[in-house]
Amino acid sequence: MIGRRHAQLERLLSCRSWIELLLESWRQARQAGWEPAELALELQELLNWGASRVQLRLLVLRQLLAHVREVTAMCDAARRFQWAAGNKMTSDSCFYLTAAGARFFTRCQANVVPGDAGSATLAPQWKPGPRELWHGNQIVKRFRQPAHNQERILAAFQEQHWPLRIDDPLPGSAVEPKTRLRAAIRSLNSRQQRRLLRFWADGTGEGVGWEAVNNLRGPFPGQGPLHPR
Image (cartoon, rainbow, N blue to C red; front, top):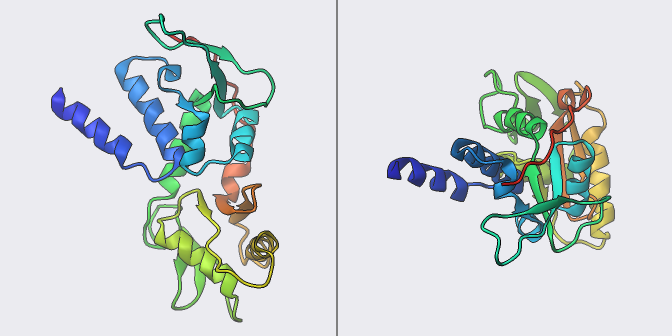
């Protein structure tokens, strides 16, 4: 039992992104036989890990993430929550993955494991030598002309093993940073040989993310009722 708990703690501490943290919290709650709300993460904690309010609202809208307010009192033996009204976030806001969200991000997590272009994984891969972007065993984009900002973004994703979002990796210049980042993202999405990847701005002007086009298709299932212990 001690060994198993130690392994769970190691997995939790090895999380590289806020989405991994949400997914690991959901998994550990399930393994313990708890409701996911028991390990709901506070808003500030997710922001500290790199999430943005825009991203959280989008996931709540798509019913991949549950948004609740913690109302636990000092005398309570367990955490208590209320459903959050609307999309306003407060210091009491907490979040946890719905069952649909856990399924969705488990699939996404499989997509971000580094691998060779010919393997079964769907992880993107940036090859700086031939200046090619691959997704699985298919080429997405080949750069024949200098595209420094696009290539810096792809190199940063590759170096960090393709998390779903990274901070703006572009160095300072005379161009306004948000404008330059948006222009680079538009260029990444244009002239793809195969429309397999979409890059997106995180809404703050300070980060860029990616997703497989196939993951954007189809409706998202609804979430179940909240049953905090």
